[in-house]
Length: 325
Image (cartoon, rainbow, N blue to C red; front, side):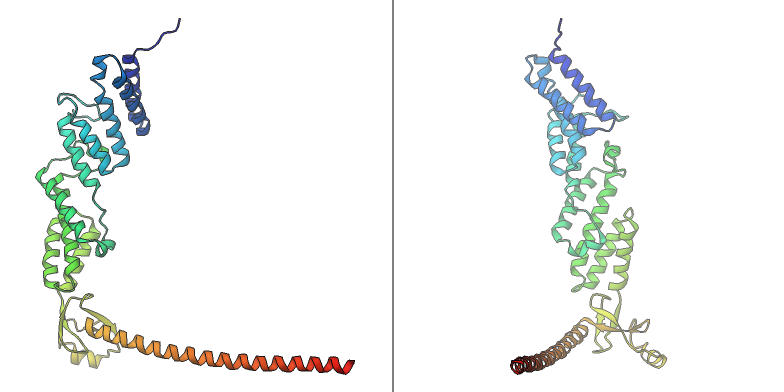
């Protein structure tokens, strides 16, 4: 005799398999089983089973979001979570009890966070101000959540209070805004970098080192060795060029302005440096073009000489063949 499983049995078996795969770390398998459980429940003629269809669909979307970690996937999971009965206790494999209302909010926060561009000090100069705005918008959302931690912190790897993450994002935004005005408003940039530093207490050491370095260099003022005008902002509005600085020059002129001479190099403002560089480029191009012209003339003379010699050789060959006849 063949026994057929009822829809309820199929549903329970698929849900058990889904949780089993989840516990083994096989999230893709869990998603497949939960989706199949949803199909069984949603197509069943059993009203009590149909009423449960939203639960496996939520689990499928939830673990799919943990796999993809995209704003869209977290948003889908959040929307589905809000469709569940508020009193439903969700099995996420966590020690604490989880209910739809709290979880939906966390998924919305994760959707916001996963949509942010990554922050790298080496790429900050290429970041647009729109990125700073995104950081600020999400930061304000997180700060409104206070010092609480995510229920899902172990599942998503965010082990910090939400306000700490928010402050760090504000710091990143300040860095981007400061970078954009370094050349034209170095003093203002120093102020914004200082604000960033206050927000970055929990940031990576290289980020804080970058900010401290910018504050130090942008805050420096000196005179240009060439034009003697005062200038602010090392590496932005003035740079150091190698020069032959002996003890006489150093002892006589080092006191003319702070940071005028540094490690055998002299401070040169942006204007003078670009003038010297452009003039040097023009001179180099002039002599390069002159050398190329001379080389081409030489090439023409050599080719002409080669053609002359080839003609003589051809004539000699013709003469020898004629004499042999």
